[in-house]
Length: 603
Image (tube, rainbow, N blue to C red; front, top):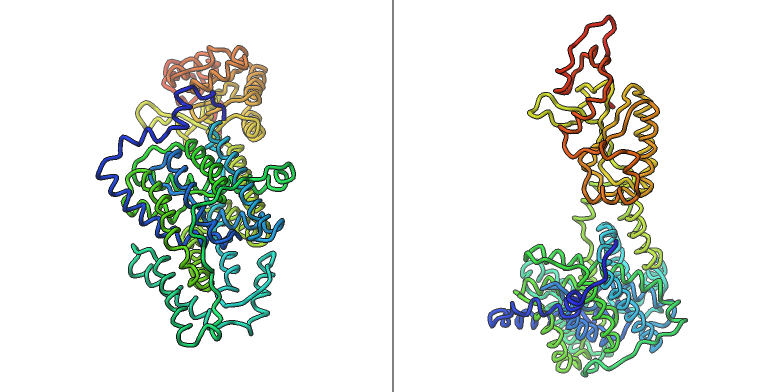
């Protein structure tokens, strides 16, 4: 994708985008944004702790990731409703990438997480500045669905030990995790199971009967109450319900990524994979919300906002943040009007942490596990999976490949695999443009071109329409089809290409047209182009191949093309032709002969 360097006005738009939506702020929108921000901050508290557990980070880091990054992304992004922070997908990708190199929760692990966050932010910012927002369009939605479903199963498996009250060593993959859980079934803590099940049931009931309520908050409170009740009835020494422990009630401490050549080499694959998936997640959420509000979303500006949020967040103890589906959807449903709602959510979360963090002493790990099981189950989009399986073999291949790679391979490899499969399938489709034989339809006014095998063709003149770009990847397919037609119908020495469906002709495509031109000239015929787009024609002129085709053989209108080509046909053949599909044929008197010219079959 070619783009000109941003001018001064564009730079101002990139780094001061909030100036464009600030005039929309009124007393009414301010009130709505404060209420929406308060709702988002309340939900972000248990979510942050849960996502930090998934990421292998200390619980408070999930809260820090929802503070500064949320404010920066809202200020420098373009979406009115997107809320950034820690997410399930980003957390599990980070855990998968870093757990091989350091013990989760350790100082080295945290240092690697901060460095990874900075690297992700720099890549995101660079992609936004060079306007590479289009790259996320090459990640099929099936990749997102398959990865999310696989990640959900990994999350549920990882939380089995906490929901069952087991103390197990860290495992490397899904089979090991399941084996460890089932081999210690005799050690299951029924009190921990009771609190976890109560948490899950409360969440399901709230989602079923009060869907507007924040089910995570309600289920967490019910789970904590159940744990306290069990401790009162049977005693903590009997129940042995493990708890999260008190969280630091302080502002996010300053931190610094550790940039070394070794860390960059170590984290580069994970940074690229995390960037691709985080941007896909953020932009897809922002687009879905923009469609509901009629907002004109700038994908490149979202890249910049996400990049700056991670760069700055890495200096305030925040790990990889991206657009949060739950918080963004809640923000929209709560009536947010401007990005101030996301800013308020980040700032109010700071206040909540200062007031509520010590109460995490009473938060059982089994309750957190129950909440994560609910979150993970909600990530699996069964309706989308069913639709993909029924609709497309290619998309099914992408879905299943990404899903199983997520379960059994490194997560960053699963994302790259899905991305590459999406790209290969896209290239396969574009490399096989549709080529249709066209004929005038005498049954309709103005005799428009149509594809109908029941209608005859001119014995001397073939018309084809190409729908797709003539670039290096498609030339083999196009050459094969067109030269097969020339061999099958050698008497059709004149070829008109309807070029309205061609968006690009590169040098290889231009050389193919030259090859066709020479082949037809050797047969005393000619190649013609009709309805070619202006930008394509300019690109074609750049290669200076226009002279060989001849400017007089490129037509802008159908009438002009048919008339000009008809003048070059062999009129002796026209005299004996019974087909006469063009209006111009009526100007040639018909001469009957013993063996009249017959119809060519249309392919």
